[in-house]
Length: 439
Image: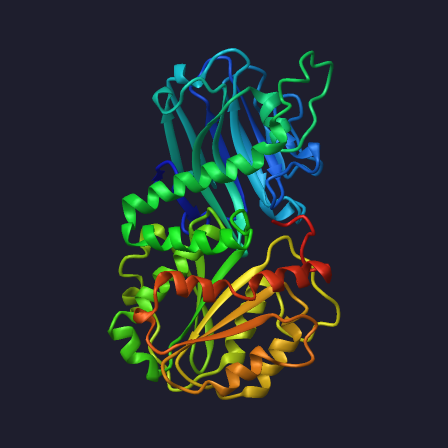
């Protein structure tokens, strides 16, 4: 069964029963148009022109991406092997462009994802979706939090193929006579991020209006610190020990999850965050996004029962394995394109303190920041110890306590959630864990 995708919708390839090898049929719906793929990095930049695949360059260096598209052919099929891509290529953006005609004159365009000869998902658009734009970013397949996802974009772009190429950091070949035209292009990646956020905010208003004020307040706190353009991955780690029962039943954990998702939507226009649960053991519980936030914690509790113990260290192991592939000792700082911001929520102390300490020390060589959140009137002596732990390469944690989360204003909540994070970012950059150019 083919899953229809609406503009702005995101799905994991796993949800669509698609592996790392697949085909995409892109029909632009506009006679004379060209179709192509841009292979971008985490910063949405084309670092290697060989990963711009189109009619005049139908194959990437190792054949990871191929196409049968023809010049002005209006359509084409792309074959992709994600597993063979270099680690630096994390986004494949499918585009349609025309030299002379605006996409407002397009008929019906389709982007169809298939695997093993079976259509898995399809996004459709018409000319009514666009104005005078001569380029359209139709859809993208991208890696996020260790998983590959697909997003239906449907975003028009002023200018044709050359302008789009320059906006992604590429160079236009040949004797292009009007070099002045793409002059504003260096600012385009930032504008694209803002436009993506506008689309996400519209989705929040329509699907999860309870997040509207939360996202605004989170943005205020980030902007105060110059982080309004900051990009990060985000994880919510939830204690599922038996003592948390009243917090789940009363809806407190649901409301905390909504506050976390609101912050995550400012960190990444993906509009999703990763969720981990821990008690005696720890595990990755999947993602939560804008479209499934309502009633999310109830569904989480149906899948994960409360447990009779609390093990911070195992939760930390699960996080590090998920994002960095291992949870052992680390001798040298690990470089990553993006940091991971973790909201770690618990109502009590832990067993196995030695493991937690070891994980904190090893994790201080990774771009992962823990915001430990103690809920209730417990003293949280050990969390305070982790906050001030000696022997770490950088300070990778902060502890805050809320006796009653519902009595804390959103403004105060986000101020406390962001505190010490900017200092962590500066320290991580200084140690080479993050790009110096990261916003």
